[in-house]
Image 1: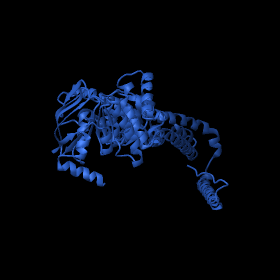
Image 2: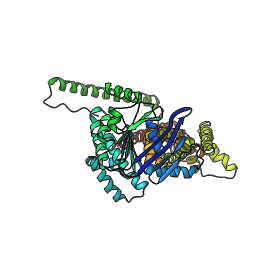
Image 3: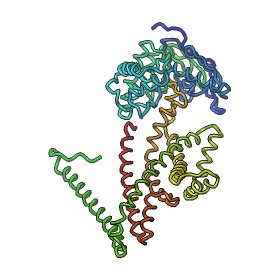
Image 4: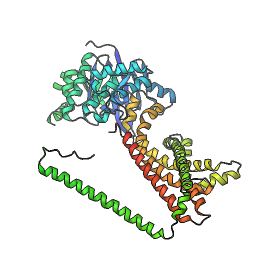
Length: 257
Length: 267
């Protein structure tokens, strides 16, 4: 699909945990309809960077723009309440899918999917239900709409979590290792949903080790190393002909395990 | 959950095992019940010589009338305690030093002094400053504030036991701090704290006896009122104890059912 305007622009993101310098100036622009895959060894900062995009981790330095909202890091909270509200607006524009699903266990699949549209966006309940049902159907789980998360398999939970993120009509979807907590036989159904989303033109940023998904669905692969972007490009180039030894070593180790 | 009844198509040994298990269970329950009967019978036998059944025949309705107030007292106090505990727990988790300070002082002060002293404070001591509470109100306030402090710590632990990912998921959906507290964290914390709150309620049922000292006419007060003039305290107290016991058994049963209902949707 033809890429559109820049939807996500993260500029010079730095993150310290105490004195531990985890992100050392990461800049990333993602265009509408684009799927970007973040890869790298554990500790390279890819998950931290993803979490900085919606300020679940507040960057120490840097600026994030998603759609029409721009937020600059304010780790000392000098701007107080206004800053918190800007972050909230930023988050509404980004849907997030977590490694451990994080469905609300006291709500059914459907209730999980209408909670934010009704409470945060103020959507009328019947409209929210119609949207939620359409999205649950999209992830092939409409028949589970009244089940509580405890009655769903891991793959089903993650697909509900994807539907829940979609109900807010975000400008971008952030995936934080969405298949890492799944039993191997359940990985496929989640990746299939993600692949469909990518091919339909959703804008996605994915942290994952699923190189098959990178080949099938990603427009671009970004390799992070020690808090910096070491190499980026189309998946075939990064996966088959990487320029840096670190990338080659990473891919080799991934294939042997 | 009870095991599936063995059906006819299972091999003989499977049916034998199930039958043996039923037999053991029956024997256990029978001996268990018999033990209770013997022990209770022995105690009653020891006191039977001095036990005036006719006295209870006249007075049991009067004494039992106090049980109603006992339950009402406990119910009102646990409601007050729960409200205080929610506020207290939020305070104890607050980053605001004033709010945190108030909540921590409350918990420390209440847990550091005897309940009986607190009952005297609310009823007698406060009256000297011009704030005169009805005995019943003083009793509810004393029990409510006391149990509120203990429940505060239970609630705080409950809130902290809600996984961090729940908060993050709510934040990622754009919920404000107060909304995610109300809609996501507290409902899950409540399910964690219902069993301990039930325990506290049952403990409170018994602690209501303490407020008989400020002449609230609950179960123990009535037992004493009936027993003392005729020197039939043994009968009155044994009867009151039996009523407390039955009350706690009934509420334990109700609590168990509530817990099972709340477990709905649990992971």
